[in-house]
Image 1 (cartoon, one colour):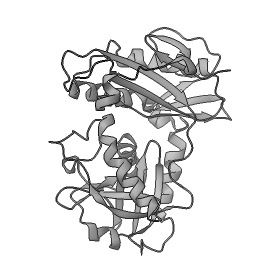
Image 2 (tube, one colour):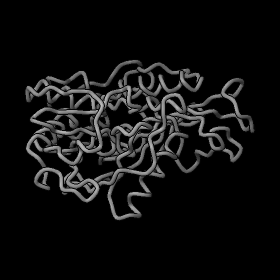
Image 3 (cartoon, one colour):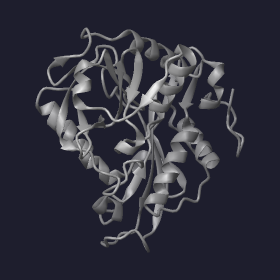
Image 4 (cartoon, helix red, strand yellow):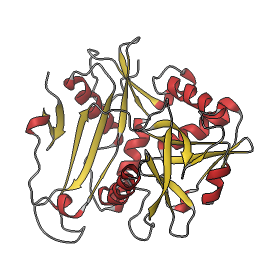
Length: 317
């Protein structure tokens, strides 16, 4: 069965979905996207699209920043995603990429008077980071862009050149991932992940005012830590040197899940192994991302292939 996409308002084989070389978004990065995990539960034979409402809400917020109009409501986007997933025929975990973009084939440095379009693609996607062995990081020489430059609260395509520069620099220097600092030298985030520290038994993470993406996995971890472990999260500015003295560090993200950080700038973090709190959060997250914890049923869109789709309704089973 061929992979499918939703493109130009219809479902079609992914191989037939093509964008012209003069498309505005290609030349100027005028698009925003989301990354949504469809976790395949082989025991229940169903997908769990985790916090899909929050993903599409964030994408539509990014559309407002870029003056991209969307003809679809959040509920309609859920339905389209479920239909696309079923047409694609996967029986393994997938990565879903919705993209809203400036579609006019015109060279014009502006956001106004340019046509918009929307697509969804679904594919498989290998683990972004090694969540079992942990990762080695460096602080990047590249600084995170500021909200007054390109707003990082949206997943705006053009902004990811910043991330790509940092990621390549890190890997070419023998590390797995980069940690970017803000313009004034405080810890911001990874190339595509939020970051947490464990300091004196408390979780600490940079605040929204330090130009981070307001991550959905980040928010999930804050809630799980509070509700299940009784651990509060402190959102505050973080100095680079605090990374070196932390008891534990880990990344969070849709692609990265919860990835332990074992080393930063060639300094061992804690005991150089996955920490206790990190491991407990990994276990909790592993349960909720498969839709197996009824306490968090509001986070789940469960799609069982072969179940009839009812227009305008979530397929919750």
